Length: 184
Image (cartoon, rainbow, N blue to C red; front, top):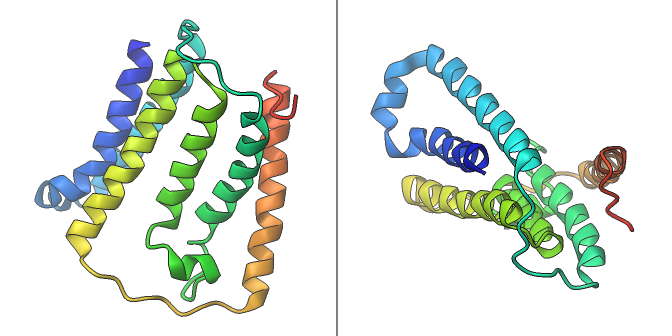
């Protein structure tokens, strides 16, 4: 559990560094990007291995209906996360949300909290949910009001929907391969 907690903290700190210490981050220059990338990679590995190695400590019993809601929410999470990819114009949802990637992470975290009632899941998914909301708040404070981007053509919307379905299917297959069937 310690490795998992450290991974979530390191992930958050690496992401918050630019917002909380912009002069220090700027002072690192281009080498700083490599350093932050390495720290994020290490934190990701710490979270993965920490989660996999953590003892199962039940905290609550997920309701039966949560699995279906989780699956629908995960489709939404992929779509919302991908809504930031269309540039310079945004797909419809990208014009409505200021932080589609962070919103996608938040939906992912809530969806996983619905179906995982153990302590390690609360640390991982709850910690990343808190990070996503904290990042949104820091970005909003630093950047102020935003300009609403132009809406992309319908073709980009359809492309995002196709990519969403493909990625969702791939991630579901990986979960099944790992022994965690999201459908049963």
